[in-house]
Length: 308
Ligand SMILES: Cc1cc2nc3c(=O)[nH]c(=O)nc-3n(C[C@H](O)[C@H](O)[C@H](O)COP(=O)(O)OP(=O)(O)OC[C@H]3O[C@@H](n4cnc5c(N)ncnc54)[C@H](O)[C@@H]3O)c2cc1C
Image (cartoon, rainbow, N blue to C red; front, top):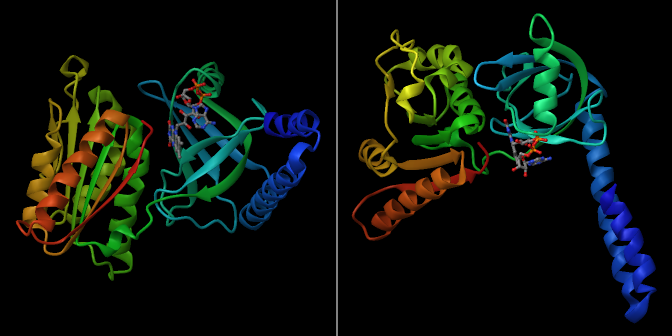
């Protein structure tokens, strides 16, 4: 709405001086085309309003389960814009689809901030069963890694906090395809998740255990808890390829180890707070220089998203 008002005032303000309206009409055309594309995409993907359940999770997080629109297809790591029509019909917010295309529903894990996410949290929290049933409009999917991660020999996934909602479906999708399609190239996955409190592991613990123990030789999961004061000692039964550490991860060392084991190409993917992403990107660039200098072999690609 504010964009439309801004354009209208630009028309009034410029009064076609120096043929400025020509450029403004071109802007209107591009904007109208983008709206039309969105509407067509939405009509193709969903059937309008979808039923959704908002559920309170530990550590100020929410899970949102949305009935899967009939024709929806998406790439692991893609996000959609969700409009919670009963709460705020004029706002739509981006969230990554935490479930994988093989699942029956769309799942989103959302951390509570101060705006609509707080209002959503309060709505669910005030219910006895901590669940609020509502309807949402889904716009998307958009984004996701540019290249198919399953086509790389090694995939290293770095995430911080809720940023794991981007990296986790990528890991799940590769493992799902390894088990069900059997024709993926990837044979080594390293999943590194930095969280402040051990409690946060509960957001994904069952899913991590399900996927990590399914294929022990090729999947390695390391969870780094950065504030040991937030430990509830509740992570004792883990398969050998899932480890919990009480320190910050040494991203450079993790990458070097992955590169040593790597037989060909490696994809480094990350999502989380800006400092984590900057460190992961710099360490990857350092190794890319080693490859260029001929001190290491293989191709190393990088893809980063910042939220978390
Ligand atoms: C591609 C993408 C995928 C994301 N996926 C997830 C996810 O899976 N789980 C999750 O918890 N969070 C995710 N986020 C972040 C999430 O969109 C914001 O935390 C959420 O919109 C905040 O809403 P709020 O009104 O409570 O925020 P506020 O408390 O008002 O603001 C908190 C922060 O969110 C940013 N923000 C507010 N509104 C928007 C908006 N419409 N679009 C983008 N950023 C906004 C603000 O700039 C601020 O930095 C994602 C963001 C992007 C860009």
